[in-house]
Image (cartoon, rainbow, N blue to C red; front, side, top):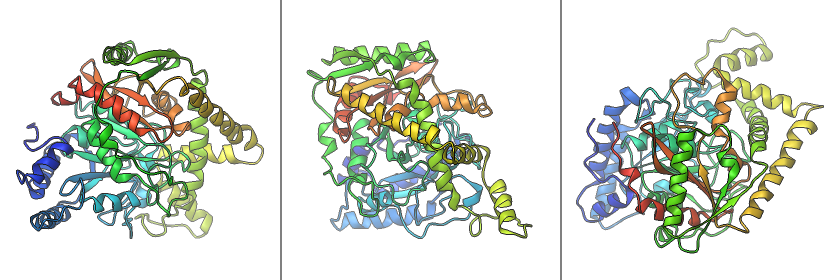
Length: 486
């Protein structure tokens, strides 16, 4: 398939638009053409807003001709994970139970995108209600990896990752609860950022685990991710967990040297279960950081193995509560034969929810039930705090922590879908940072068996600028993101 002929980064698109070398209409048409070429192979999108995007592009070009530029994304098409409410199209969470839902309002992040001039091009595929690590649990079929379509794109934000990796869009939004941005970014060879919990508003985002969920961007480059976070971040009075801390000019940190930067490497991130190929690629990237002036410091984070259990107890408990509101009375095309409320719930939730969502409801309800709440949920919450403190102590010695994003490269479609435990272990290296609420970024760092590998970089709370600094300096010395797709 032909690669996009127009600018392939947000920075380049912004410059080309400012110089009138391209128009918003050009970018939208290129995006729609590329989507049409890739969709039979990838299934990255659940809905494409062709008519809306063309109308918005015309309006955007008219504004620019009149001297009005709304922001750094003015005229740029952006894809949105179908877990985020938009007044355009449907918001289904990739579930049958919300098949007909059209949000009456925009999520705060969508409002920010529109204020910055972005054009919504469509909604992307995901694991149902963001519960999964491969985008195979979507009620509407899996997303395929642009590098090798027989492989998964990762999850739960696999559609957004595949859309950026295929060149269909320059940026897309995802959500990350336990690794759902970073892991698909690693699998698809793009940059994916999970901000600090509270850095970006969750208002208008369908909740999975409310104490863990965070919206973040997928982009081709680190600088593009910095631009996106500058647009998305900030306090929101409609989200009580939203931080009032000021938003730095993240893009200004995407340069410089790594001299004086202390990089921590936890030995637990290279424990049994991490493939030798991934280990080789990631350790080569760490050596490259040292060559660029960073000081490498070996660390131990002994609670890392406990994080996966802590995460799944907390996430599933919160999910069972959040999912209790879905009754299919308005939005699901379910043929009803029930004669009582109890029968109705059994019927519609049985038909409307997929296997992984049902599993979450059962696991979470059990963990929160009388007699088990103290032993399971509260104990997990205590260990969560210990994990957070462990990282706080580590960051007294180092500026960032690095390691693999995932234990392996993108696995074959169908190979884990019937093995929930194996699927959960795909997140073993991302959930510790989610449990601690830390910001983390995946940047492409090489290939193993012709599949992308991501380097995970984590920083202290609300220190995303460190991620952009370290990752951009590394990226500028390598060209992994420029490697051609199929």
